[in-house]
Amino acid sequence: MKRKIAGLALVSALAVSVLAGCGSQETADTGSAAGSSTEESARDIEADRTTLIVGFDANYPPYGYMDDDGEYTGFDLELAQAVCDLEGWELTKQPINWDSKDMELNSGNIDCIWNGFTINGREDDYTWSEPYVDNSQVIVVKADSGITTFDDLAGAVVGVQKASAALDVLEGDQKELSDTFDKLEQFSDYNVAFTELEASSLDALAIDIGVAKYQIESRGSDKYVMLDETLNSEQYGVGFKLGNESLRDIINEDLEKLAEDGTVSELAEKYDIADMVILGK
Image (cartoon, rainbow, N blue to C red; front, side, top):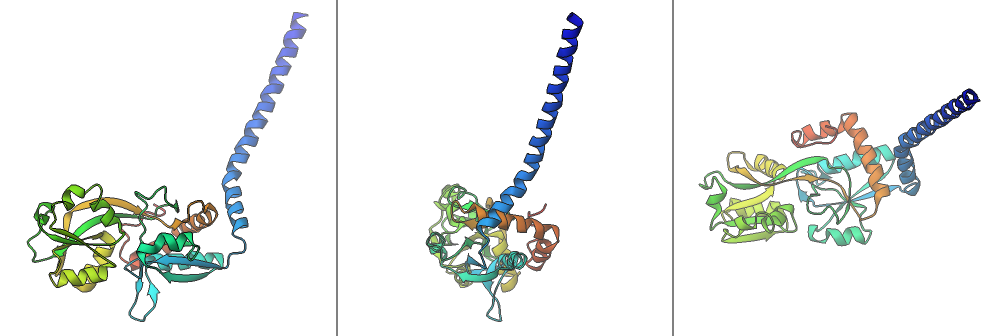
């Protein structure tokens, strides 16, 4: 009798084991399908979209600017166009006043902010794409200024763009440094600020390294230098209205595809930011 009971117990245990194994397989299959389900859900929500309206600062090369032919271009805008090509959307390039970017986004005038837009410090203010560029904030001075370190900025007039990440860091983590300046002057864009630096109305500029490289190269690499010290390090992403995960998910999926097929690397080389792009690495 004991042998029969033991045999029945063994059969029961084996049955439970088989059922448990099936359950584990179902869980694994469900898990592997979760990502696909999320992407399909995002595409269902965005099924009627035909246009992507990208808000950008038209004076922020190499990410977004007007070229010599009067056309808006830049690394970010070409990347956005590549996404639209994948989706069959029309890209609308909407230049905006950077101070008004939140109003433009929340009112629905634009679908996203895509233009060297810093994630750090704004994590909870927007729904973000995955980061695609590692960026630093730097100080640019004229080559003959005699300024070589942050200590030399004491008593200097320093320029910065309004509502920029450089301004944020000088009013935040680097406030002790900015308190040594004679003045921190804000400008609507860096083209104007560089003109003031060239005229010696400013002693220095606090600026994103990618923008600094572009400006220095286009204005004469022998005229300006970047200090070795950096103010901050940050990452760029595409900013969507808080909660708009459906569009974010589609953009993320497409950015991965563009990284895999070499489009991102090609554009990064074209705009001389290959050492800064982290998408797909």
